[in-house]
Length: 283
Ligand code: PXL
Image 1 (spheres, rainbow, N blue to C red):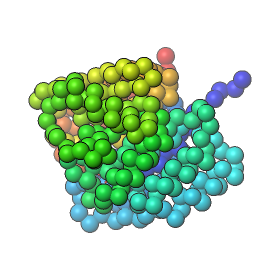
Image 2: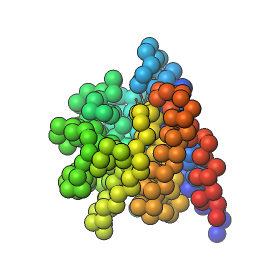
Image 3: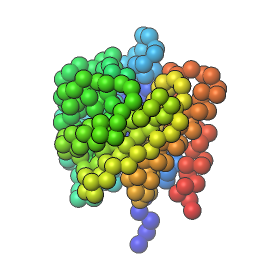
């Protein structure tokens, strides 16, 4: 048998500047040895957090024709990874596209990108929240942050430290949206720590990966985290190990950026850790 090159269909926007969505998902998945095919949802001059007057080209009309062309060409996908969607209509479209290509082995990761720090991103409404909760029901794994989790479950967002019981309730309720695995980001138990919790409904296990907090909130870290996580999972690492890898490499990228002093809106210096990340899979 020849080599099976795994292929992901990455459904995110292209923000030209600011290192998030496809400009980080592509290089990180490639470094993991995973082919990353892209279904762009929108093209922006920059991301929408911290820049004024960004351009926004909605690609809703192009998405189904692109997917239909792939289907006609007989192209298959080992995985889909959706993130920032450019319109409400894209949510049902992404569900249709995933179902169009789904086989028993397709691994679907949905990051319900729409909010952070208790607030929705500038272009989204409560309809988007409802739609994202529905999209999560079509995934094998979902990776919300705490704000997205609260919105999708119709709860008030509570920032600050959590207890293990808080996490247990939250990941169980998130699994109720329909995915077998949940990775919740933004988990911390005190003021000095920060990380993620992963929950596998097939074993009932919840694992915590918590590191020392780095001051400041850097843009694009959710996408960097998601890409590091998916690369590891598709390289057959366990959920716990992949979550650890994703937290470690995301934190390392943030630490470099904090030391650079480039500020939060230009994204994080993941480029400098890509070599070490790639080496995890070259052994
Ligand atoms: O990193 C999430 C993200 C992706 N794409 C766009 C964004 C954001 C977050 O603000 O604005 C366009």
